Amino acid sequence: MKKALLLLLLSGILFSCNRDSVNKLSDDEAIKLIFESAASSDESYMNLEYLTDNFSERLACYPQSIEAAKWTQKIMSEMGLDLVFLQEAKVMNWKRGDVEIGAIKLGGDLIKVNICSLGRGIPTGESGLEANIIEVYGLEGLKALTKAEVQGKIVFFNQAMNPKEKNTFKAYGEAAGQRFYGPILAAEYGAVGAIIRSLTTSIDTFPHTGVTKKAMDVQTVPSVCIATEHANLLSDKLKEKSDLTFYFKTNCKNLPDTISYNAIGQITGSEFPDEFIVVGGHLDSWDNSPGAHDDGGGCMQSIDVLRIFQEIGYKPKRSIRAVMFMDEEISQGGGKAYAEEAKAKGEKHLFAIESDRGVTRPTGFSFDMPQDKIDKINQWSYLFQPYDIELFIRGGGGVDIAPLKDLGTPLSGLLTDPEHYFDWHHSGNDTFDQVVKEEFQDGAAAMAALIYLIDKYGLE
Ligand SMILES: [Zn+2]
Image (cartoon, rainbow, N blue to C red; front, side, top):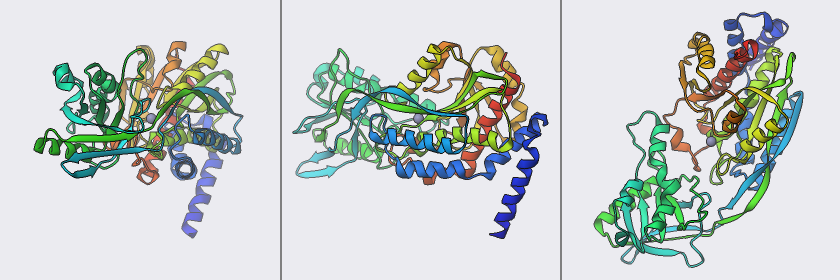
């Protein structure tokens, strides 16, 4: 206890010594201070625990999302930032309902399996749906069949994410088509339903949900995702008895759009208050999930960037905003609302970075911007090497900040160790206890360090 107190006092002395002089430090000294500040504070990490405990399952169209936005506004207000506000955003309104039953029917046996509806999907109706199964390997597997082979059946899309692919985001991208387009393609082939293997690298009993394409002028069929352990079971049972039936019942609903909010906190720039740098994540999560890694963690890291600047006494030249975007998971209403208002007000956004790849160990940054700006940032890469942050690559920024690209804003994404991200993604398994404090803190520091350099030197 005494030792902890002493450390606290020492860090207080360290930061107060540098409070007035941080702007005079060399870049490597300033970045060292940023990492020390991140490592010395539990505040944002504990806020992530509070968020996941109290506002779990905060899909944008649910009341929890508004409660989470108001709470986030409150914690940012208590930090004494220069400006804190909520920004209205139109969000898609899809409700899961309260019935999700799935079972394999094998002779007289009924084997219950874990399923859940896909976002924007349609329900089965009161009596549920029962039919024979046709198992296929992804969209291509279905396209290889004739309509006569599929007619009246439930299509079971059972393409697993490639377990050998180290870049799990790539493996996810390769398999995600079956979830997004599968139900509509199944309808085109005369199927009555679709079951999608959960997109995860783990074999577990959690259904990992996600969005499916909204059927506008085309037919679709009721669809659910199935836990990987149960997908394997279903596949095994089909090998034993190919004419078994599957039953599922859901009562999700597609409703007219509704309103939720982005939560925004700002340190106003000392030299160029009308130029903005954004650091953000998305506050909404899937409604079957506490949303710790995806993406409560990215939000709390973004707030931590502002906390770090306050603590080390850095007065940015430009206005730095932490933005908790709403509705990333379904229709990206928050990202669109933010960019629309920025455009309407003629705000110049110098740079935007998003943390939405899990708050594991930071490994680098992806950049979506002209090459000359990437070249400029690359000159600073040596400053990150002491922290094992070495990947400086071309790539997307993030879904929420993407609409800022139309305003010419250079975009970036925080890269983190992707190994386990899809074990947690879009499921009840995305819990706070699986967020490692030091990794979370290092991710916040990495973004703060990059923003510090861009604020100090610009990107021209
Ligand atoms: Zn996310």
